[in-house]
Length: 148
Image (tube, rainbow, N blue to C red):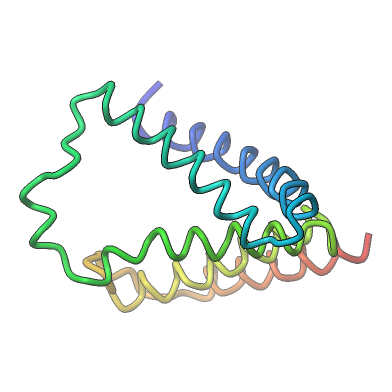
C-alpha cells in the first residue's frame, strides 16, 4: 500500500472516530451540563494522549523552528475546540449524521477557498465547477440526511 492509500485509510478511520466523538462528548456535555466542559474534558484527554505519543517518539516538543511560525499557526487548537464543543452541543439536537455532513460541507468550502487563493502557504489550486458542484452535492446530502 502506498503513502496516499495509507493516508486515505487513516483519514477514513479519523472520520469514523469523529462520528463517535460527537455522541461521546454529548454524553459528557449532558452529564456536566455544558458542551464547553465536555470539549475541555475531551481536549485534556487528547492532550495527555498526544503527550504520551510525543514522549514515546522522537517528536521534538520544543523545536527552535516553532519560534518562526506566524502567530495564526498557533490557533489550530481553537478551531478544534470550537468543533468539539459544537459537536457536543449539536449531536443530541440534530443527530450525528446531519452534524457531520454539514461540518464536512464547511470543510470542503473552506478547503476550496484556501486552495483557490493559496492561503496559509498552500499551493494555489483554482476553484472549478466540479469542486463547487461537489460542495453543493454534500450540502444536498446534509439536507437529505437531516430529512431522513
